[in-house]
Length: 331
Image 1 (cartoon, rainbow, N blue to C red):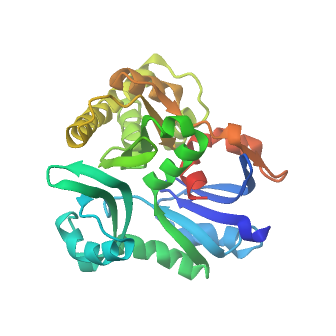
Image 2 (cartoon, rainbow, N blue to C red):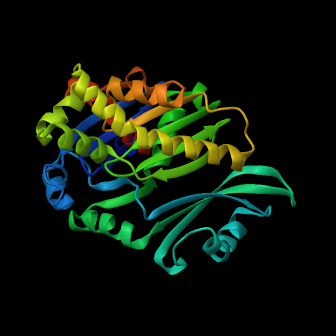
């Protein structure tokens, strides 16, 4: 039915995913999929999207989008136990001490993660607070206003990716797993434990850092670099070494983030596995991260739980499977 179909737009700086999705018993059904290469970073997103949303391809009503970036902050806070309505009004006054922005400049939301959390000050509840700067949110709203589309959900990339992890890998979601959403210039680490989000942290490292390393080292053109990552072809030893060296900084930051999470949460048991989502899923990248972190680093297996309409290109789905967790989770 039309009502159960949702349209998702994942606006990445390198790729934009447009997806029409329906949840059916036991699988997700993909009605439409387009992956739009953002050929020039300076192009207006509404111009890129216009041909797809102006025709009859995708429905313009009730689109879901996700955001990431320095203007998005997620915090986990112990809070006195109270009703949901009281929590929302209390959070308006309490949020300022937890976020690095002026309260007038942000849109807030919150959810209870743990009903009863033992703290030094007695039993509290653990609340996840999400704040998005209006100046980060407004350009996205403006894109869809220009296209005369109506948004129904604005989510955060890492939370959408966690929803995908819960759907595609429920057993890992219910244990102790990490999730790394690799962005163009910011990557986000999320940790789930016993079926709930527990920790989120942004890391200033992205795909552009990998590109830069290959460019300066080997003077490779952008197109050649894109092909290297896209087709999962075997790389030369030199290319492999350049990528592995470039990832060392990310691995250091991830170690620091894991240590901080363990200190904060009092969890001595290590995270068992790290799932990757984002533009890059090359075996060399997975291997370097696995060896550097000494835990399995894997792609999400989304293909086992999806089916698609005859008009959907299966090659497109398979080639870009690593890019799709955010969009799938958002759907």
